Image 1 (cartoon, rainbow over the protein chains, first blue to last red):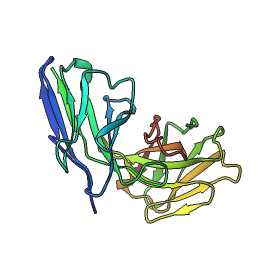
Image 2: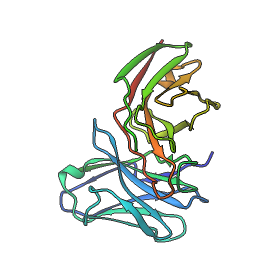
Image 3: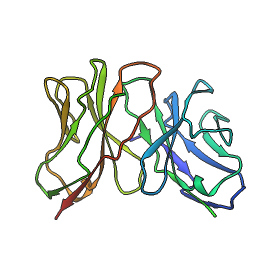
Length: 115
Length: 112
C-alpha cells in the first residue's frame, strides 16, 4: 500500500535554530498538508499546498513557517527560529484530489523537541 | 464545518463489535461524515466516510441516521490493535475546503 514518508522521525533542536521537516507524499497525489499535534492536544491543521503554492493556512502558520516542494517528490516544512512551544508531532498528509470524495493519507510524523 | 460530539472514552471486549457514536445535529445537506483513527501517536488513519447511506468497507461500517444528525462507526470484531482515538469529522462538500478539523475524539480501549 502506498504511504507518506516523513524524515526524521525525531528531531531535537535548540531554541532559535532553524529546522526543516521532510515529507515524501504518495507519488500521484496533488495536494499536500502539514498538521501538528502538541502532546496531549488535538491534531491541528497548519497549511495546505497545491500547484506550488499555499492554498490555505491556519493562524498557527505565521511568518516563522514556510513550505516548499523543492523537487518532484519532497514536501518540506521549515521553521525559521524555533520556540519551545513549537515542540510537537508534525504530520504530513497528501490527497489525490481536493474536496470530500477523497481520503487523506498521513505520514507517521516527526517528533520535534525544542530545548 | 458542523460541530461533532463524541464520548470521551469507551471500552470494548476483544472479539465484540465496537459501536462508536457521534452526534452532528447541525450537519447540513452537503456535509459528509468522516471517521479517522489515531493509534498511539502515529499519524491519523482514514477509516470510512459517507453522506447519507450506510457504508461498509474492509475496516468498518458507518451507520448514519435518516435525519443525519448522528452516526455510528462499527468495528465488527474488535481486536487489541483497534485500541486508538477515533475521530468523527464532518466536512462540507465544497472544493476548496481541504482541511480536516479534528476534535478530541473517543479513546477506544479493547479489553482482552
